[in-house]
Length: 136
View 1 (cartoon, rainbow, N blue to C red):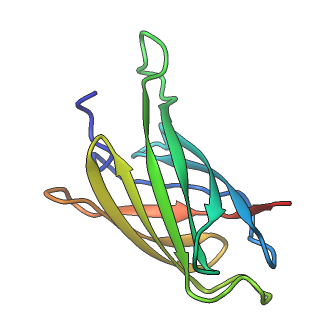
View 2: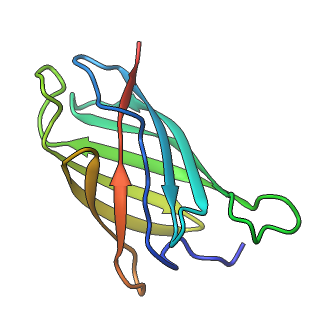
């Protein structure tokens, strides 16, 4: 698996907006120039009220997958700008994604989703889009 996640525009989605007091969040997203990478994860609250982490899976769903979808696993850590005890959702989100031994960072602000830039070492920064959905 020598493909890089920083090869193009990266859009990652985490479904909907996070609700108050969420202990875990469901993650769904898309990345790549044409949204050809699908990302899924479930993250749980860590020691800090606004910190979440868990395993992630990226699957190539583009039409150029001849031998079935390529999959990459890794981890994700989210840091919300305020505790999830208030509404509306926190206005800022930071994340670190670890895939294929590469740590990439993200900082985004809440619009319809969390939107910002993913920065990976020795790669061009790429756009990233994130949504959150609480799991009760």
